[in-house]
Picture 1 (cartoon, helix red, strand yellow):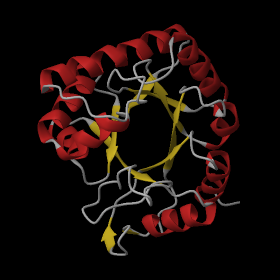
Picture 2 (spheres, one colour):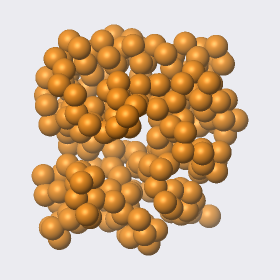
Picture 3 (cartoon, helix red, strand yellow):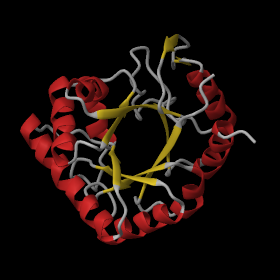
Picture 4 (cartoon, one colour):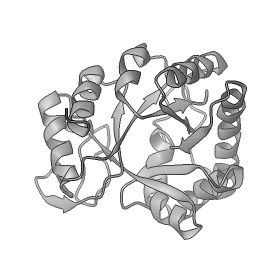
Length: 239
């Protein structure tokens, strides 16, 4: 079983439990102000991550605070490229001010989901990350276009899996509109991660499919997010 794995969490979104989660994760995806947060929350989150020696990443999204960036907005690849560039620069500027290196980029919400299935949009995101800094790592859904397009241009990537989301048979995440989209029980989350670390995951329909994990995501707005973070940290770092 693979146990050496990054644990990431979406942060700086105004949920209020960042300080409780930060000690248990290794990477923080920081909202850039387009779906949540502002320069003040970015500054606070970067300082908190620095305190706990957590890698920081930009978490770009559609400009859609009303829907928390979880509603698709039609845009061309060129527009997506500029959207991502703008937001990475926001985080990068504040990170530099705090003498903290930017480590990675992970798209948020609807931007993430459409890029897993749309090769041109995935390429636009990968190109944006690469053009800003080719040492950055692109986090993307395991087996998705985000990963393949990063690899195609020689950009480092991490294949992401989820502790608190269920999967469809094609390896994509179950839409949040589905009643079984979210995993809210800690034991269920741990069981899913144990299975994933052994190279497979059970989909929402009960089918087992192969999966590859380099980073595990939990969402800070989940009901049991702090407990998930603690338990998964223990699983990944046994005494």
